[in-house]
Amino acid sequence: MPATRRADGRAHAPAGRSRQRGFTLIEVLLATVLLASGLALAFATLRATTAVVERGEDMAQRSDRMRAVEGFLRRRLAGALPMSFSLDDASGQPLRFVGEPERVRFVADLPNYLGRGGPHLHDIAVHRDGAEMGLGVSFSMVQAGETVTEPQTRPPEVLAAGLREARFRYRGMDDGGALGPWQDRWEATDQLPVHVSVDLVDARGDAWPTMVVALPQGRGVGGVPYGGPPMIGKGR
Figure (tube, rainbow, N blue to C red):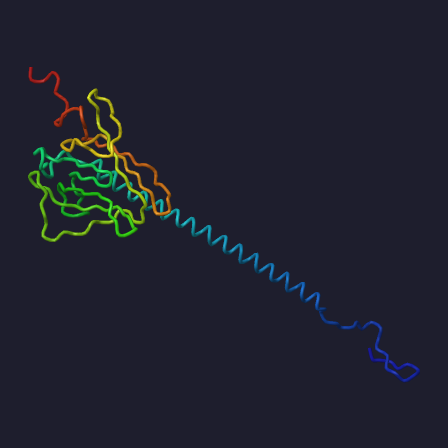
């Protein structure tokens, strides 16, 4: 609609046309504050979500690691054989199982995927490198009750790294045929214990669940001698 002229000669804009005006400073500041608050909330949510995901992945990796170490130790200890790997220098008795607080040695068949198979000395021990502590295992072939020294010995395989504490304990049968108390050292080295306990604590101070392994061929002090119980009703 064209503009009209008033009596004084000035142009008069139509009444229906609205005026255009910009944002005020307060409106701009308020919009900026709202935008910043929204971005801060979004970043906080993203950080929280990322932290939850990382904690979940860490817990999953820790659980997988624990299951792998526990499965290996359980299979190896449960497969311990009443087989000599050396002779005690003092008593001349055969060494079949040597258990210490941070080291355990015994003979078990080595799975084919770990080597050539057959009876091998399993030497599971705590290893320290400065402040770092880990649990490792090494294998040596056993023949005729003696450990065969190979010309090229391999370093121990790492089972668990980043540990603060690792402890083995042992239990056998008492003279009355009942389970005896737990021991930090297995003194009856010519016999296998009935149970072996393994406690591990990682570098953060989180304790792994205590693992107790039963040795099927273990008898311990006061138990049934090796070779099994006497046959009843045979040979008569």
